[in-house]
Image (cartoon, rainbow, N blue to C red; front, side):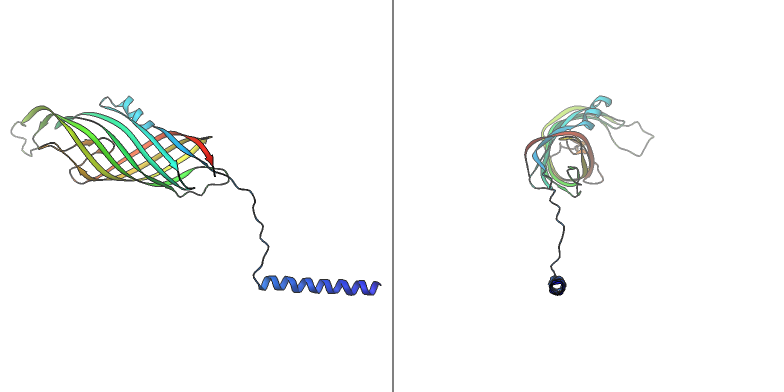
Amino acid sequence: MIFMLKYVTSILIVFSCFLSMGQESAGITNVAVDSTQFERNYGLRIGIDAASLLRTVIDDEYTGFQILGDYRITRDLYIAGELGNEQLQRTSDRVDFETSGSFFKAGIDYNVYDNWLDMDNMVYFGARVGAASMSQTLKRYEFNTINDFFPVDEQVVNREFNGLNALWLEFQLGIKVEVLTNFYLMANVQLKRMITESTPGNFDNLYVPGYGRTYDTGEIGVGYVYGITYRIPLYKN
């Protein structure tokens, strides 16, 4: 009886060895599966640009605000946009002017950050199409001359130009960090290129709401945002 038990045991051991070898040769391996899965919140995230509010407080020539928003459509892809209003009264050595108007930007953000566990932060690339409607008031200007011998010819105009508009393309690089449940701090830098704009006769737009300062040397602009947002959770996935 003991002999038969040893015999059967030996056969089972040999059979187990052949079975293991067969599984390895067929590429069958046992892989531990992590059954822990974290669902992400989906919903509308909305907030304000704190940078424009701070500038309104410290810059006597500037008044503005900006509303920020995005909506998650996949795990890493969002539709996003901004809506705001700006007014700038600038006094300088060569020109005094005032710009006032509203703007709207719409586009997408794509998150490239791989969150750990249940974290929900973003490092993202974004693209926007921006549009502004504005008025420009030219108050005073001086002719640009390299001859300092004669007095500079100064012109007082005080003329307002209404119904102006601008369209531009904007790229963003930014972060959004969840500091409390559904509350986020965010910041980004922006690179912009003007596509088209309407200008007053014999006078350029020196500032465009939502776009920022313009330059004679090119059609490239820059900007930034520092904001606080809150996500309204609608469902999880």
